[in-house]
Image 1 (cartoon, rainbow, N blue to C red):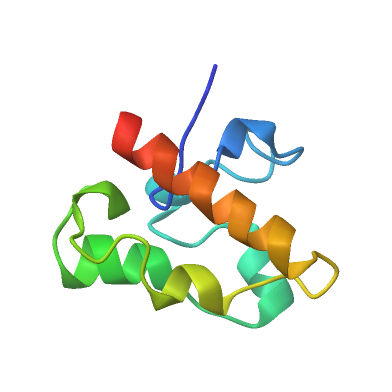
Image 2: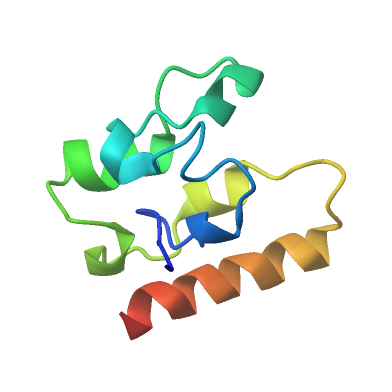
Length: 95
């Protein structure tokens, strides 16, 4: 089963999805990996769902916004991060 997060991340590709993590939609924007970043809520979920009242980022005219670029795993090269953003945006637009 494929499951897409609010920001276009393919949750079902994650090893903890369905076990420790129900996905951002089911957790109200609080997936367990936020603890590692010491964040209380996913900024993309908060922006799209809570602030703008959208079902996900696909309906936002600013897609992809600065938030997509702000959170980059330092172990991931910038080119790879940008490619992942392009994939997420495509997934959101194709839904």
